Image: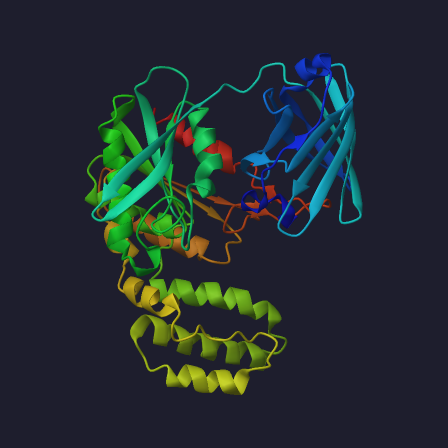
Length: 431
């Protein structure tokens, strides 16, 4: 259900006069479930009261969706007990209506004509409050803006710097994981990629060395922070970030461990072919369609990654336009071409061979963007090439590139059940 993705919601408050006794009974943390079509999802609701503005606000967390702090766009409390909440998504709006009854709350919600139920109880042991601190650091001309999420207590704490995936990724992309590790005693540093959010620069014109340098600068920032244990700072990178992680580790001696999540172990052009073909093959209805899709994709990748003439791509596009699998090549002005050429020579295994710190590799077995089994095997051979290797590999059955499982009957995606416990257990051994 795409309406429950973290980037899709808009914050806002609705005004409503409420009796004082309801105010004290409504604000706080609630634990419960959303239920629809025979499926249920655990949700934590956080309700706050702005007394000066006489308004309510609420956010929700869901481990299944791997989101935290998703805001409801509207929240009202009529009289003592009638609650209405709206959750605006990218394509739909879910409306929740319910009733407060002592230490419980229950009701129904509707979205696109589908109806479900929700029920909450007052949380007996509210989630510990984490410290969030805004940080700024530099790498050359680029100023990077981020958030350091700290566990309770004085420290010094172990810490993880979260690297970005491809594209314009902000700090929000890693907020769930950073919060999850902080609740287990490990600080998490998340930051906006160059040219995203509050960070300066432009990721589209930056090299992999630039991006690795940004991560290294984040590690050095933590290394000088008195609340962080300088001997226990690691990095977590997903997709492009996981592929780049060994370069960061080799170039940054302060890195004490590496988590490579969906890290490509194949050459960059092969990985691109694999990703594109997995996107177009489902639309290829005949063997000839599949063969033409492969020829066309190979020509596109050769032009983008190896500088071959684009004429062949344009000629094939004109011939194949209208096929069910067809996609137009990026325009001449697209950053796809320059980015592809800049990463074409990157050889991840050359960097993995030089890594001398503990490594955790995690993959979804059904990853359509990175060949999981092949990448894991190739990286494992590279890392295990030295006598003091410390390597753990986990491949989660049925999971995709982001460790999601197919949606349940309610349309809510699932997460591989061992994914988060694996990360947290492995990190606990680094504490």
